[in-house]
Length: 129
Image 1: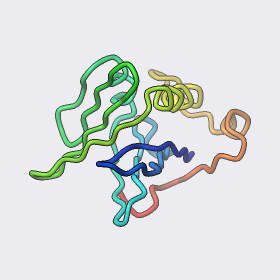
Image 2: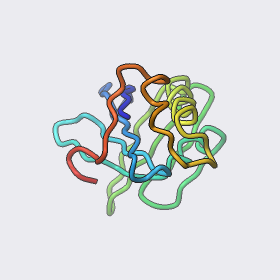
Image 3: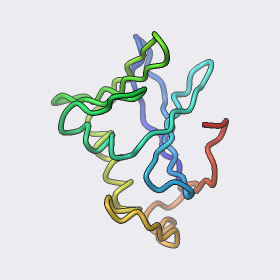
Image 4: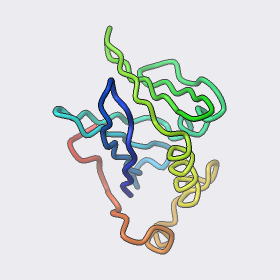
């Protein structure tokens, strides 16, 4: 399944693709659509928990305020904050939960087309992970 919402990176507004992978029901792949897109694979529970407060200790950290959710991506000594509209991130988390309820990661892919008409299902992450 692939969904797209927008984030602010620096002073640019960019689309960010989120893919849910059949092979890993606990993870989500996130790819900011930039000049050199990189896909980040991390636990989808970070997005949900990040709506309530700061989470993450590694390369991906999530925190939120009243109107925004910030996903901080770190690689080596560099970091890049992606600032999302909170309501869009809440909608994304709700869609992920409808497809595969948190805590019940056994996926019934037969429901996907009914829940999300027109959504593309993916077996792998495009461009690698």
